[in-house]
Image 1: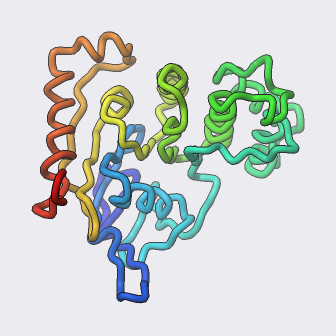
Image 2: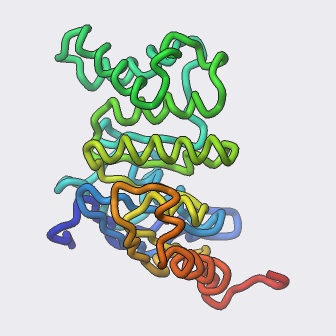
Length: 269
């Protein structure tokens, strides 16, 4: 079933892995839609299947059953229509920041002139704050700077959709806040449809239009969906001072601490 205003439609997605003890059902009958230009965060406990959902949308992992439709076309394998930012940016160590981003740009915009392709690369590296570090190798960049390259690389491909798998999970608090701001400012320029996996409640509230809460596995599914009412463009201080901020934060925490387990809460939790 295709929802009229859905840009991404995940319908009855199930992922099962065979194991020596039988089938392991990671997610079951998972359904979610995202509108064009919407920023959605997928939140849940570690191991609940968040990254499995993202990897299936990315085409890196095939669902056992169900349908995935993006912009009216069924997804089948990876493609440049989806820009991906992983927790670790996976840069080629022998290439500079500029060359790492150019690698994908050359493939996607092969009909553009060399000068135009370099202009795209320099534009996005400058936007993420690496205007003076484009020609450094990854070893000469901090973890936060390498992740900026990863963000620039995803946006430079001009994808239909952004997929972000806990992109700030390995960063210190200050760098995380800085890069959340970089991401939201970049996203605001053309409102790419975005799906981001996170386990950080405050990050989800700052970035998302909606937060989809996943139940714990096995057979994880959508538990609750939270609409985030904060106006855009967003300022972190204004968001945290919003009268609904702590009420929404508590709603997310309550779900994660109590309702995500669906009666299977482990002893001692």
